[in-house]
Image (cartoon, rainbow, N blue to C red; front, side, top):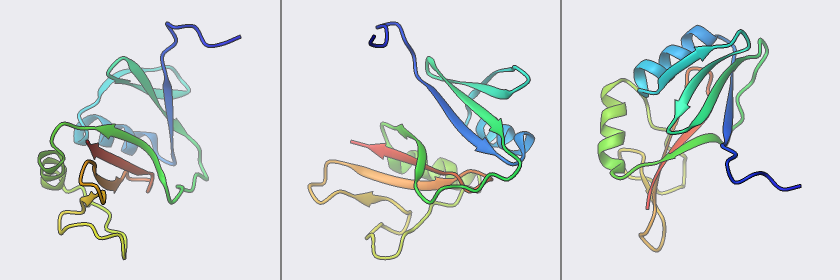
Length: 126
């Protein structure tokens, strides 16, 4: 059986401290908080859901776990930087001074940052 056409995605981000993570996703990233169902803080991801789930011994992975396509990466990076979010600059990747990497064909631009638990998040334009 395949997924029905009406199925929507649900993303999960794990945290050691739900209150801190929920504040980051709500206040810093501007996501709309929908509910606390007793198991997770639930946010709207433009029609899909993000569930911030408490795992006491969570250790963040070194790769992105969630990302957004944005129309203007420079403006989005500037806005997040103004909110004290540090972009991750990887040695040898060739990112610019703001942390934005441009693909060799110039069609995609990507930036990385982390939430309070160190979960890597990304922005992509292109």
